[in-house]
Image (cartoon, rainbow, N blue to C red; front, side, top):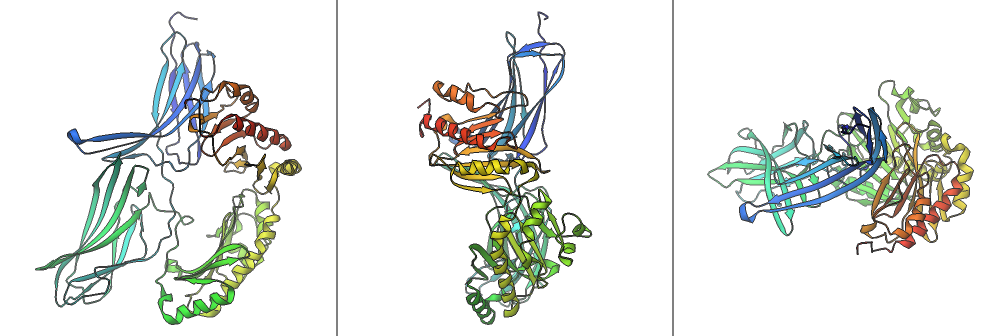
Length: 600
């Protein structure tokens, strides 16, 4: 070994964008020009939120930590000359805000690599992590804004606008119907439309607000006549900050319409809108509602009458209630050039099989499993983690193939039936409600028909034996998930799946009503071929032997606000042994007094 050591070079390979709630791989690359002795290689992810308000002596600054995750990638030993790749799978918690750089607030994430070299300066490197924003889903509805609730008053200037919805996205379009009142008594010069972005921060008890961006358009109002509705379509600029809501700051967008009156008082209407991070995919796009024709007395009475017949209740512009224990919602939706549809949606407990049934495009209906339903097969594309699970489930839902329906959409948590009709006649509405009831009645049997995944076919009996050892056990063989009680404490054994259908890991979770104190919170992730270290400073020394047995062949362990979580390889080779692990988790929980920690 040379007297003068040569520190290795550190690089990090990451996806361009990572999302909260998803796993991603960080690949640490060490390039050593000569052999060097090291104590350890550690990786730490830190996320923070900072904001400030005021200026000069009245300025206030504050930084909050959002997340801190650590992993040991390599232990003591010699790092041979050459290139070394140390992969680490990281799962960001749900609900983290995206990376953001505003005028008075910011959110940043970084990964720090620490190579500990004995008797020599360590290698420390930091890398930025770009955390993106999940596409949110909003229940978008038409909006009407007026300058006076009672309509035009006397000779006062009056303006009203109607929007099909409040969801906008960069590069999209803004559509609204605009009308002016009392045109004979007021000289309208123009109508100004503005999109305004506000950034609001809270530093301690101090609050601050400023305008980040403002985009304005001017509309010539000289050709607008009394009460005449005019369609206005405007292009939304590119590269806009999306609507954000964090613990200590927010970014909000507002749409304002100002009627500029000569020799009179201007009038202003508007409200908050939602700026999405980008154009939502069809699968995540909220339905666009048609203009509510159910406001008329005749149509409203039809909907109420049909609702009384089938056991649903009229709630505004929709029928709501339950069929066979499943929540049902029947409403009208406008699908642009495709027309207006009656839509019935049933909600169900998650299946966990990755099911997705959508309308096929082109030859898409010939891709994926077929159910032998002729026209239905050609019109729909079926996808799931395993084809046999999708076929077994859908085969028991024959009402989905009714000729009365235009198409259906099915996923793990819902079933949607589409019938092409404007919703102003009783017969089509009654037909849709009846089909929803038939599907709801068949859901229970369809769920029980789902077979176990092929990857777990040989261990199904072991899972059933494991279920028999728990109290109030509920086994779902489709996703290979088990819930129950161990010693009176809620627990879960779930299989986490990769995108291509391979099991990623088996997660054992003890979920007590009162989690251990925050001082005990810890996250351990094992790199390939590395055994988790049971020497955890946050935990009392007397639990180290118990923890060492618990972490044998484990690939992950954490204690957080949910409870105690242990990750094992999947599929489980001997499922009944998982009961012993759950008992060990319960014993460890008993040694950690809830609400306290080693530093309290």
